[in-house]
Image 1 (cartoon, rainbow, N blue to C red):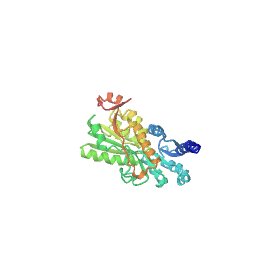
Image 2 (tube, one colour; image 1 turned 90 degrees about the vertical axis):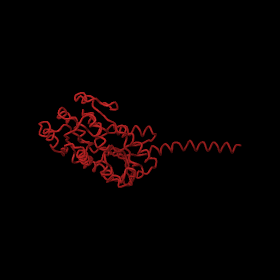
Image 3 (cartoon, rainbow, N blue to C red; image 1 turned 60 degrees about the vertical axis):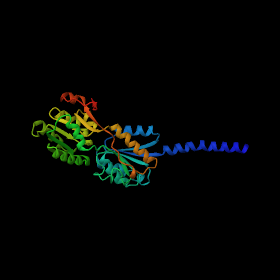
Image 4 (cartoon, rainbow, N blue to C red; image 1 turned 180 degrees about the vertical axis):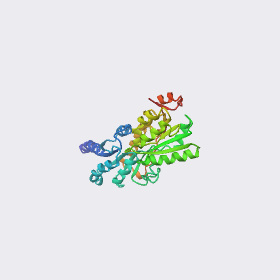
Length: 317
């Protein structure tokens, strides 16, 4: 009897001793956060969701400040840690940041990207269903046809200006897709290249304001630079043309509408992808996901343009 009691006590002590070890192992998850323009609502939702899932993580952050060269230098300084697999996973925001990041991880460390419009065209994955490389994540790539179907229900589009950032892969992909949509739908389209390091955007806006460019609608797709100057674009030409954007940020800046997944939803989805990876899942076989898009609208812009928001629209400011 004494032997049985002693055996039971020893087994119990082993369980108690095993718990701290398991907790320590869980706490050893290390995630490198590669940010393109600092922490956004998506990253806040990402961290909160991992915590809700009971995944303890230590974070190391690098911030590109929308500069590829700066990001490359930041990651170069971490090459030793990356080669030693010091990180269990890498989170990256946007196409440009993910392209630079995967150039350093070299398929050795799993990467979970967020807010990448077209990961196939960006050569980040082989397919959305089966990435085929040590990379998966969350796309905001709502098809252009679907976006413009939502927009044309609000107001007709006859003459369209597309502003795109020549330095950003997403913008270039999107411009081509919008051109295809315009051609198929009999819409006259002008596209203008802009960049963050010259006066190209100011020149375009001056032409719209002066009437040299005659359009009734302007569209800018998912792009960090254009999102960062969306408020200025609204102030300059928002009273003259209808503005549609590729992400929520444009609506926050007073543009009429965007049809896109919510930033928080994308952060949550990325956290769920990362949780699978940290629990031993193979990123190469974890499908890329597109959270449910929603029609976001600016209440102020809708009022100015006498547009009645649909019942399912999410109204901002």
